[in-house]
Length: 328
Ligand code: GA4
Image (cartoon, rainbow, N blue to C red; front, top):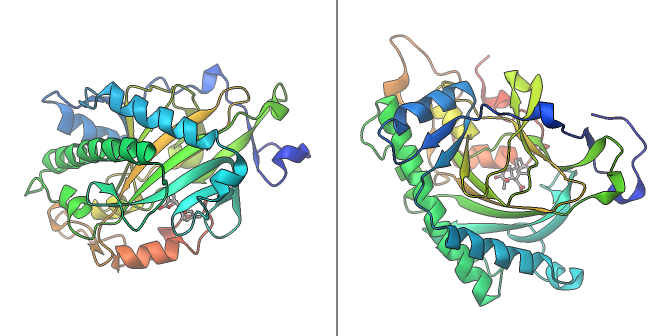
């Protein structure tokens, strides 16, 4: 982290070194979801990085474009109108504050609940019919991508039935969350060599996260357990998938829950959509027996998703949430 007196506009927001061309992660694994080799390629990427890009996913560009333009229109409203869609917790509009324990980022967002394949009725935000319809169309589509990816993981790992993982995010009561993030540009830092943290480093607690952004870069992932941060070149036509903590546990550490963060651009705004696939609260999270070798034991104490989620909301964003469940 760069130590500087923050210009007033980014007061309380940690700064990061601005990414340069040499930080670009050219070797992002790319999985063609329509190819017969997809299952193997996904398993390989999850073991190496916990992260990959998905192409040939079958989601219409119009579905992504419509959701994006409605989101841009939402965030272009006057602050007072957006604030009426708040607070962010449990669900709604939030700005700069992330979580409940003091984390701050240079962003505004909508945190939304998904029920089955649609925005939950309990979630009245966003209220505009056109935005809701666009998000519902997008959520139904991205959730199908998540299911296909989870099925391919099961196939690649040799787990039966093929929906052993995907059922956890599709069954009744599964805990799915959808997030729309807007990272406005931060011109105050232009030319200073540093950038505002958009979303600080963290791992996702769920099984899987599926992200799509506009053409503005900013997403970074940690390699070598955080020793190096690399920038993921943006691709508005693709989805980016990351392994979450729960899937790391289900695979007894074989898949890696990847640390990631977002760095704000000084000139361009970034808009991203993330679908988080989580299981029902009562789901037991423990290594799948098929994945444990002869005599191999779980690396983790057993817990339910509800217990993990509750513990997660007591942590700071950058904390290692799985540490408290690791067997010593
Ligand atoms: C990270 C992944 C998702 O964005 C999220 C985040 C959640 C929040 O923004 O409220 C958390 C964060 C995320 C992990 C630890 C806790 C909870 C903020 C935070 C400090 C919606 C989620 O499920 O966990």
